[in-house]
Length: 250
Image 1: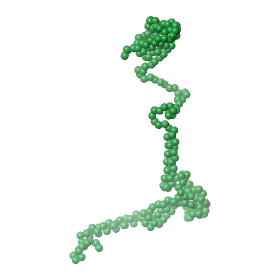
Image 2: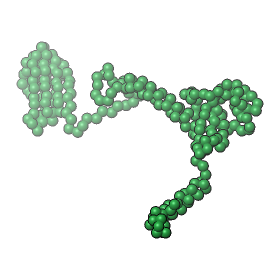
Image 3: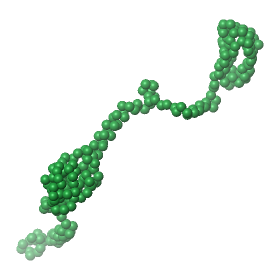
Image 4: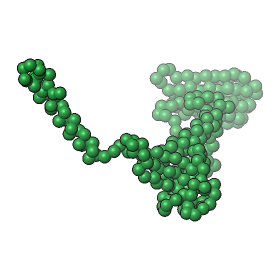
């Protein structure tokens, strides 16, 4: 009964228009659902071929994996249509009675099957899981062979070899100091070129000679160091006997 009018007043009640409008809206929704059609879902079942093909079955061989796609009406819970697909050969089976049930058995998903059909979600997920496990194993193996980042001793570092025919150029930064050393033997003389920051003369036990015209002793080290911001002038030397080592910092 529409409305909630009083039985003795003869009216339809103040809610009549609202309730009538709701019923008309429900009628329109029901009509739209009828046009759209039933709600269908898919079901996937996997089988392995163990025999045949036994007529009328065709399009598969022993060892192939077949996938059955059922289109199901969820309202009536009935199968609308069924499609059989050969997962191994990537072909659709056609014909009534194909495949023959005597040739197939339900099969659990196998990690060794290559999945090419993008609609077989179950098998695709299984294959991805298998690959992920392999990657994890490889990563673990790599982690044990690659040292951690940062400075380390030689035993904890990876060896790097320079090619035998590669030329390695070494250049010093601007203003870098260079130390040179020379051994002077008897009887020689010369001078250290002006511009050095420090010069050291070390005589041996048989040395006789001069530095800057002054006779020097054996087994002695003579150091000449320039003042800060300055350089040394030329320093003359002579070895009359024995040996003298000269270290120069420029």
